[in-house]
Image (cartoon, rainbow, N blue to C red; front, side):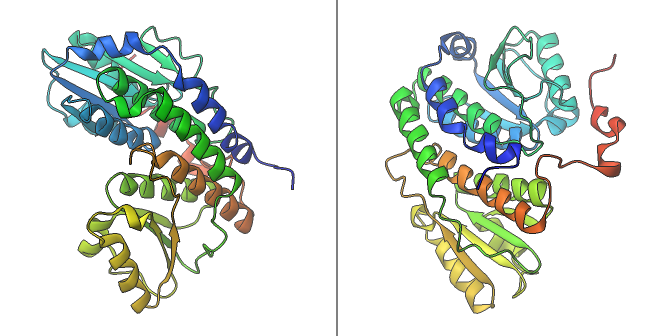
Length: 326
């Protein structure tokens, strides 16, 4: 059936964007970060999830890399100091608290690398893809991860180099062609997604896409956090999706699935078969599968996934709070 949403169309462009970015010249951004004693990765929402996975990849290059939500750092973070560098992730280059973090970093004189959509106009920015036509962002997220992987590779984490990114693009292409999401039933009440390590980040990103696209109550958890109290309200009216349980070295994801079944919860599993990819890069094809699930749920609920923010939530003043002073 022909796609009728920008979301569905853009999901299918991601593999080509990743292939293009695999060979991007990121030597300049890498040099800016190379001498830093501490690299801070900043983002909001989906961009925060990119910051979390980006910090993992830079950590594999031996860098002291830390992530923070833009709002937390802008108002409550420790002051920037000599030896710091900042990576600001914002697809639109308009996100209020991300703008403030960038301004703080520039004022402090620390090196800054920004990862944005095309057309930001920021001199330090690595621009990834065209501004998304759907408010349920997809390609900008996976493209940002490709850029962060490329920077990490140039700083010493060779497992994230061009060849690995091209394999990742192929895995995303395969995931879009055969997402394996048909068994995941639309829940009567809510849906939880859980994973271990980087799959825990993807669980939260996937749940965010489901909420935005379909207005379905969904939540993502790192497996340990799900066990420690978050699972309590879930019952037979809910669903649980396990992300790649076989790659959880402790077996907790699978064990939680068994416990959920005993509680009458419908449990599904998503597995990519991407053992040849580093765990962080394996998040990209998994993310594509969850994006398609969000689009499918939007169709089930007859929601427009391209217009996520409406009503009072769309009031302009809410979206400018936290921005730099004029």
